[in-house]
Image (cartoon, rainbow, N blue to C red; front, side, top):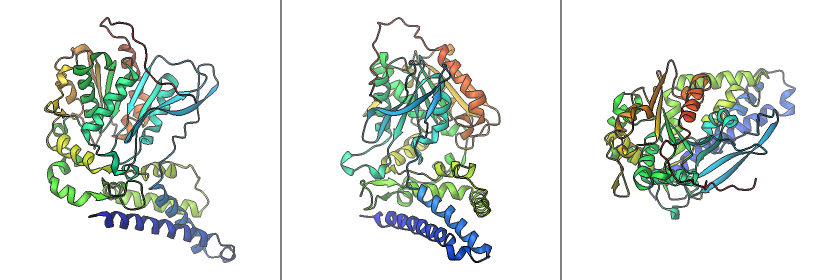
Length: 427
């Protein structure tokens, strides 16, 4: 049961801080305290409210909160989130817009499995819904998956993408954001050799580490600096008794969140200090900018140890995708086999997670793809978040991606008419 104690210790610390926050909030709201003209009690209650909210969000999966979308008829159409493929470690879900004719664009968003839930792409989904049928990979929290379900590494992740693409059919346009970009490229190559007719029409790779060595960042420096033994010893723990995945080896979300916060500790401390003052002065709102950001940022999920370790070892250290040496189930996946799928890369000039050069490296690996089916874009002044969910995405990148999708909406190679195999569930 090695490392289970440390996992439970982290959870105990989280629960303790949540309880302390709730207690302070209750004390600050106590009627007898309100009779005392002392601002200290107001500050105590404000500190408690902010603290309780922060620590409770760390174990809550955020809702999609996409209630409706305006149709071309000017009416609000309800949005229903429905699963179309359900698997142990992740589902493929569809944002079904009710009472709206099916859109010709079919987009599959591949969400990262890097510590946050797929809801991190909520604004991306919202921006695409008016113009497309949107599907997304909804990865599950490893702490909630029983050990009996087995392992899940980057090969399994790739095969999940293969199955999702095969299910949606060849008229799909795939957009992979950040971490899954190299695996989405590998999944497309897998289909190119195994089942060419099931390949998507286009593949857009946004800020992904296709070749981590193409441009150094803190992430790539860390990958080179630490050994696999050190990483396994310092980062991997067993899920504690509180969750269904008890005993599963994971990279805990709370541990990764601590790393995230420490990278910009001063910025986060200032943000929480200012929020406490706003709450004390009755200037904060339930859905204000601070709460909207941190409700998502603090909601973290565990990754299976084999997925985390194989990502570092094979993508960042071994450069298997960059060298076109990636192997799935004992079989080398040749990216050069992609000959018909249009591929576009998107990078941000100020991206400090996946720096410019890392993603565009995919185009050099596509030796069998004609140049007219390759495209790239570097967004000036954009950081990592901005290229898929921020202002740069909304104003510049999204229109370019949709134009790219439309330009490759039909297959130039004549094929037999196919019937879509998308499973439609009743809302």
